[in-house]
Image 1 (cartoon, rainbow, N blue to C red):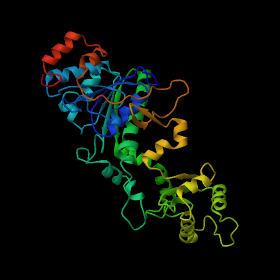
Image 2 (image 1 turned 90 degrees about the vertical axis):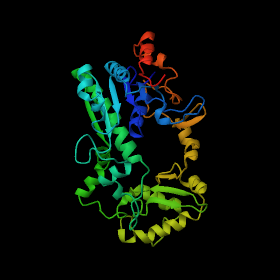
Image 3 (image 1 turned 30 degrees about the vertical axis):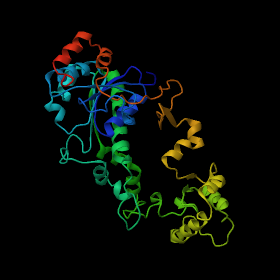
Image 4 (image 1 turned 60 degrees about the vertical axis):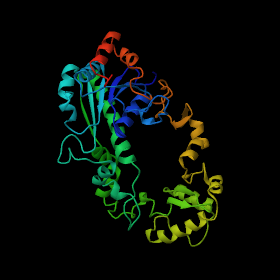
Length: 384
């Protein structure tokens, strides 16, 4: 394994979106990660496994309902630098794997906890999903058209941006601190906290009076300012413009053919925005998406076409940078960000079956062959 986190060893409890995303980020950067699955949870041999969030790490199945399974995980955690778990508060404690026990056995362990509501608070034990967490932070309310329900931004803001990314960041911060202090700690990563943090700019604007609580009345809505938004083209495609600065706005007027017309409004004249947005919409509907790309792409308009997933993989800029890589025929986003000296390896596809190489995987963590066999007989890996 190469990358800036080479030499870091992490145990990951298998889970849903945000925890695996955090582990993927850390694995992409070279950390050696062992994912713990329940017995029988993964696809059978020969079945393609393209759950890309689980890429670039080994996997074993442990039956945590058995004493042998718990003992195996406890031993692994003693050898680990960090741990990732995404259960509701109290679950790991009931298994005998809570932070107090694990940190007593391994004082340098960074214990990463991924939840929606956090480890404490009146909602801590309630069920929830991305949409609920971003609703509570003002993020969901702020996205969408005026007079319409909020638009759901996929699960980017809660699960991935506010959840997994903050957990990965927190783990790296705690690992750096542990190198100085020799002490591990708990990282309480809650999607509600992360989503709120992502909204810092909007809260600052709100405090200064520059942000409206009415959806669709803010520049960044993409619905209000005519020079910041999405426009349909003649072939049913879409393009984006974000010509906020005066020099970029001037370029927008020039390349749309509007520059020099006598009745152009001032860029910041809000009263003129609805009429000018309609005017721009008519202009953009006059050409195809490809034609607008020929005219504007690479210019100072601040322009990009709206691409679907397949188109984004094929776009020349993304191809030139290697933004996407193909592994065993599966195109996927490359590890990010980039490093000048410690470039990470290409990702590898997820393993298809937990347990196909339990002996080899555990050997890398210091288990002897006879120990693995004894654990198997004791039911650590599920029914024989």
